[in-house]
Image: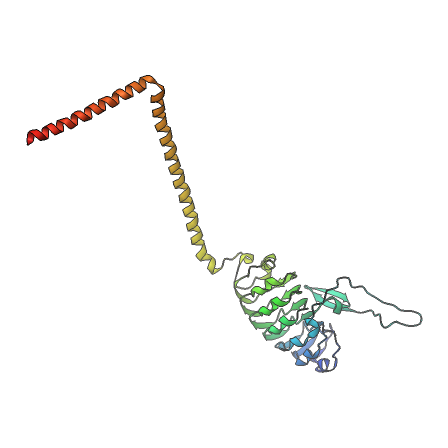
Length: 313
């Protein structure tokens, strides 16, 4: 039902009666009102797209009823278009089916998309309230887009349980608090957009989060980290310590060089003089004569001092 001019509230009978429904796309319409709780009756739903409407209110806190999205299915990348029409009639067991899906920011036509991915897209509405932590139970979810709404509160840490998630867009909301460190546990995450919120604190360190650039986090004035090239308050207290350590290293190097030069100078001067005396005989004789005269002079002065003291008595 996407790309029409449908208006009014989403019909309740969709959830009450269509229990076998796997794909529901109602994007680019003029639906108003809230997302009905009856949507949670669609236990077999794989793809739910209500984006680009005028929906308001919060997300129903019954997402755990989407049991099909809780299954960790292997994602098939080779989906073939199958169609078989004979002269006798059509074979209805093999059908020709496609759906237009917003995937990683672009429109794609998928064949048998229920086999390909599990996705929730509620972007570009007027939805409010907190993101329910029950989203963390949808372990088969591959794409989650809640951007361009008015969601507030913190990002649920349970989102880190979605190990198959490849696309996460929570941008342009009023989300606050810190980015949960559990996001670094999602190894398959290829697209992440948390920009233009009210997030604060340090961007968590993780093998996956380090692969995203500033565009994934910009527009959060109180957010800091390497990706934004912005130091955190805790980094300021560490820098003086690092500077002090660097100063101590420089002083130790300076003193080490000074003492080494003293040792080398003493060695060269001492052995230069002593070596010359030992090698050249005239110097050695002169040196010994000087020592003998010095000793005689010292003994004479001592004897004179003793004699003077005796005379004074």
